[in-house]
Image (tube, rainbow, N blue to C red; front, side):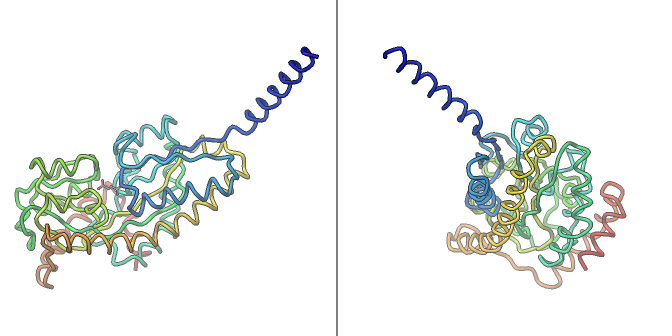
Length: 329
Ligand code: LMR
């Protein structure tokens, strides 16, 4: 009897083991550099929730916010090596990947508004840019919004001449580098997670970012002025490792695509709200002064930044810039 019971238990264990193996979930590590309560942070969390529900537990998503796993540059390498499966880098961070066409989004004043953005990302150029990634072993899944950038510094910035000699933190985009050089500033590439400290210690004098990024990183506590310049935009491309993605069972990939479509709508809605709320909070904090530009000042910024587009046309591609301008119109 004892033997039979032992045998029975063994068989049950074996069965259990087999079932557990068959159901071992597919793990997706989604790494990003911003706080959870930002447009991208919320989008990633929403994707996790929907993807796990739609795949009925066959896929497990682990979201790592706040550069917990990797900083800006490392996360892209980690994706290519397969150490993580999903990222949503800012469109200004694709140059080092060899997809410098994405820097078209950084050209000063190229985007009149969000509607224009949608025409570009959901149109032929959006698809063409994603196709470009395939040869790098990366698949583009969606474009996510953040919003228009404001300029911040420890001195008031109303006219281009006031940028002269200022050290300005930038994302790793050559277009952003050219933008600050055109203003007479000294651009400095710095990982997002290091910006607060850079501002606090004076390694940089200022930066450009969206209100939600500024507020969640407490930049308003170490910057005195914020200028509404609307000169540029920050958005994201959600990307995955192509080999990993193509290797997924088709029905799982289908559910993940559905989850991504819905998470995209969710993130885009969060973006407008988060940026408006962040501005409110920063205003209420009383720690940073907001500056509106007069029409003359705005015209001076535009004139100072105008040469950047021609200067960068070789790098970004004249055809890409023209297609962007056509679709944005
Ligand atoms: C930045 O580096 O300023 C942004 O790209 C951060 C982000 O992901 O929004």
